[in-house]
Length: 465
Image: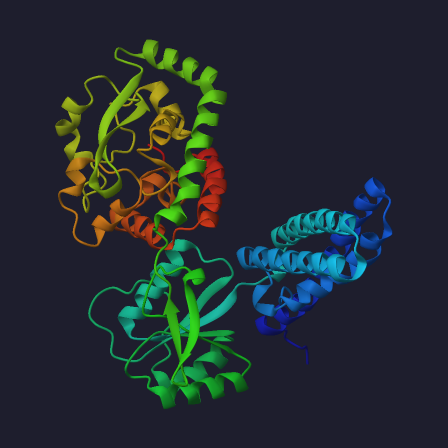
């Protein structure tokens, strides 16, 4: 009888093979970096020790754990921790034992090179995972409404490496269409184990529900552990970055602590300085391009080269935003005639695909976001940031409720989560959700990630109209 390889067994084999590749890549990274230092300075200490200590440091910070395989952001953080730990060890060893200051210099150079090469090689390995990296099969347990929300969230964000294969409801579903009508339902809490076996699920995500008390959750955890299935508990809070969550024990009971959003002046000061420096540099380097585009816009159709519009910024303060004009000079007067073509019927935005008011040059500028470049002036003036929520029109904010108004707690951005997640194709509620997620979970690393993703989003031109 022919043996059938289950998805779980295939994943375990892939994890084993991938782990070996990671170790080889890490040793090669450390050896290469240390060899370069040796060629430059002719010292053998770093060349001898770094290839041995670097994989050991990565092991200490759990960079080889199963949960980290294939996930980039956590991988980069652990690599940075390993480099900092070894750097501190090099300083301590130099001061207390060796008394050689040059060793610290060589060690820092070697560690920086090893960390950079390790990150690059691991990213390349993640990009070549291939068909062997099958998505992890997920069974979700909870109230039907919560399950639908969870399924829609995964589908909307195209969660990498996860695939819902079934659900178990803790109550009767309410009337109405399900978020994913193709998601099979295998009964209630008593059917979880049989559902796991039937679907080959590797993860069971349990959403908060009063029907699942402490004893039921403990028994479920025991049973799933016996099946080799991981148990994940979904938090009641949505759109909270993992970096804001820590587990604390209070009175012997584990609690999830949610750190407050970083909005203090001290936390934002580096962002303010960097925004203005990069905006000034961008304007300086892009001046020839801006002049050419201004001339092209000016002579492509009647009207000025720049379009000025009142927008709402930090704390509801209005400002004048600059863009290259992409429409006919009388576009606003023609808006009422196109009301029936508005695609955004659920929110205050006015969106028309293939808007007849847009000029031929304007369509090109919008596709590649070149019309937004003059907003670097707004960034330099302090009205906007390089990264932030979409700058709203004053009439949009009149209908903001208490939740939506939180978008105004930070400066609007030249780009943002809305830019890299679909642009004008996003429905109103999804654009608001992304903006609020940015406001609550802001960090310097999130800004850097959005700026990197913006290049790809602009190059694809999807959702720009």
